Image 1: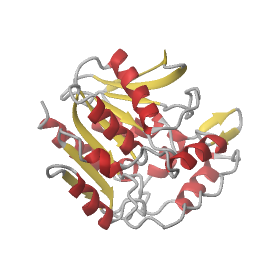
Image 2: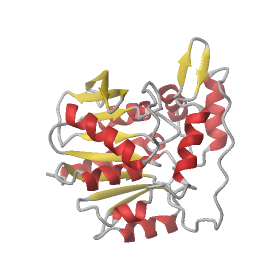
Image 3: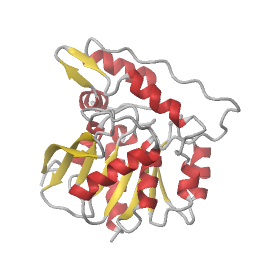
Image 4: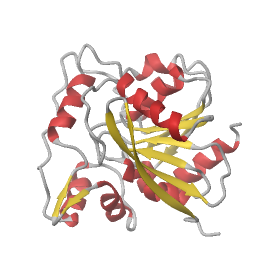
Length: 283
């Protein structure tokens, strides 16, 4: 059986005041509990396509979160908002127990899902969470907005190669760009608007923010796998130590030595095997 033995199904669900797009990898043979995979703030559900096909035997439900990709934007930027969306989709498509996986800012959302639906969440997987070891005393400067559109996929590749640390081996970067960027006719654009990203990031650094990884980690009562890009600026080694110590008991950690912030795309086989090994021990 080839690694990509399975099919992709896509659809939309109306819930919580907006229409949410999702894609679901349905393997020919399932070997574990399914995974609900949440993308970070720079991508959309397409970031999991190559990873799901590599992992092959794990069913993966991958939504575009509110305001990203092909999902509508009902406003609302709190961690609780995103977690509620994820659980509403799981109620429809994953009625039993499942593993919740998040990348980047969605790691906080994954932990929120785990602690608010502990009877259904069997385990948690965090892929390169954003961990600030020494937060600045003043509000951090928000990043410069991206261009509204790009002329080609090659230009998008240059953007990610220049913006992201770590190695992009073989054809991983062209595949990543192809899977996460949006195409409108001959125009290539990011899977979010600058307004949407600015609004989200403004909230996450505000006094009202509910994205504190450390406080959420303290109340998670299921097995946790943490994957860190060895060259990641968002999740340095000191951040790994601090985050892991926040959980009530030891968590499993896998370091992807050549990766920056996107280890599931740059060291796909390593992350895939680590996930399958972890899931094999979850019942």
